[in-house]
Image (cartoon, rainbow, N blue to C red; front, side, top):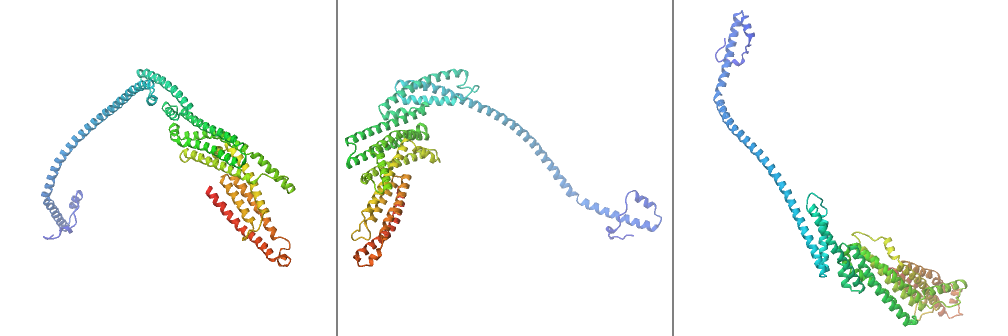
Length: 551
């Protein structure tokens, strides 16, 4: 028997279901029956405890159920509102789609209206341009007429791209009007072109620069940039040619008045005339490029400046080469060079020339003339090539081939011919003066060296600096090479001749000659060699410095 207060949780749970009933029926022992009874009682008590626990939670569960009922009502309202919002959003979306479609249609219609209005304005403007061009032509207001033509052509280019369909100038009704307008405008344009060409030709013939500029500026609005550029460059070339012709004719008259340039005074005046005429030609060309650069750029852009330079260079080739050839002919440089060659051959063959060569003093005058001509020409070439480089596209570089081509014209060839004569005369002048300095060598009073040292290096320095001043590489190399040969051969031999004199030191210590005189000669010869070595270094530095100055 189970006593009150016994822990029923420790009891064995009775089997349930049909098996339990079968087990009870099979019991025959009173003890087993009693034990099973107690177990059933304990199991009943546990069930009662669980029921009491569940019943104690009833109130709380009822409250929870009540709140759930309230939440369900709220959710129902939310569901109803959500359904209404969905319907509203769907309606708004449909309305927005409809409005957007209407807006697109309105925008398309507006763009078509704007396009139509602009084309209508264009038709009106084209009509105004036609009337304005005619009236301006009648009033001889060519600038205004050109502006009207330019405006019409711009409108024509802008609206001629449209085909049919969209309307405007390309519609069937507008096409005939547009064609008629274009025909009328082209008639006015052709008339204006003819008038401008005639006026420009007259201004060019009269060398009326303001009117030339005025009418040339009218070519771009008429879409005749290339023709305007060619006309203006031709005018500039003609002006340069006329001025060069006047200068050359004045030069010829001056040469006639000087009786062929005889005498030193005549030679100097003729030299000034040749250099002045050539320099005036260069100034005219440079002025034509610089002063008209802005107008040339307006006519046809950067290529216009390059074209002008090339065309003006052709005039320089024609007139400049004429001046150079006249100078060569007037100074008889070919005959002088031939006489120098004959003189040198006689010296080489027999040691003594049968006749005197050209006078070095006269040669020096020619060298100074040729220096100025060559120097001016090289400065001109440098200036024009620089202008071509500046006028080219950004980053563009003038190649050596282009520079050489610029110098390879007839004027460039005449400059090279002049340089050839210069080299021949400069070498002769240098050799003759060095030989003369060696020949007349004498002891300088109160000097440490003989006169030969200072005289020879003065001649070499003068000739070297003059060749560098020509700015021509070929002449510099030839003259410096000749100076080096003179130092290594004739001057060196002259220095060694006195030192290597037979029995020099025997004479020094003998009593036959005055010891003081022989000692002075020996000391002077040694000083000549020592000072010459210093002068060679100084000459080298002087050449380098002068090259930097000229370069």
